[in-house]
Length: 243
Image (cartoon, rainbow, N blue to C red; front, side, top):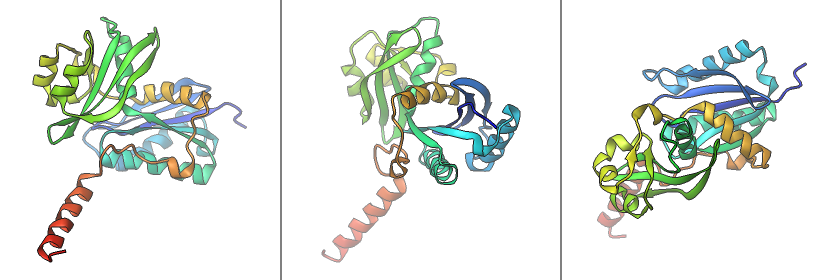
């Protein structure tokens, strides 16, 4: 009988996902998903493999932590769906972890040890998803500006220097990043990892930040593009009918 707390952590917000298992808060197994394959085809077989490596069963999972967004609409839906499924089938607790904090934690191991961090992801249409963090101590961050959707040039110009910029949004908005005076960290520090979902999720769980079933959803800072296209076409049809 397993008496340890077994945590399953999922990161599928970006192009390349990852999965981690932790026992009593300590990382027990980790696996990157293939960038060339969809998360849905590889995800559950990989979870099964990791459970086997650690020597536990799905029924032993007591805590599920997922990177909730912002990020890939499809990837975020997958992670939330897994959470609802596990809570319904196993009764495990679920914690939603902010993706931009997961990304920002990569900088804690950077040799320059930046004190203020801006994490950004491309939001398309010339915008970014962004948040600002400050190093709280040697191993933790404090959120200074909550995740939002911004014009990169104006928003980055409003952040107090000095700061470093991290995340895959850098590749899409280099000009705005350079103009802000922030230091762009190397690409190897950009991808979010389930290893950091374990750390942030564990902290949130200790603080009692569990999700009720209706709260196990992606963090969408705006509607999915397909919904916006639908609403645009719907509005156009109404205008043609004179409504």
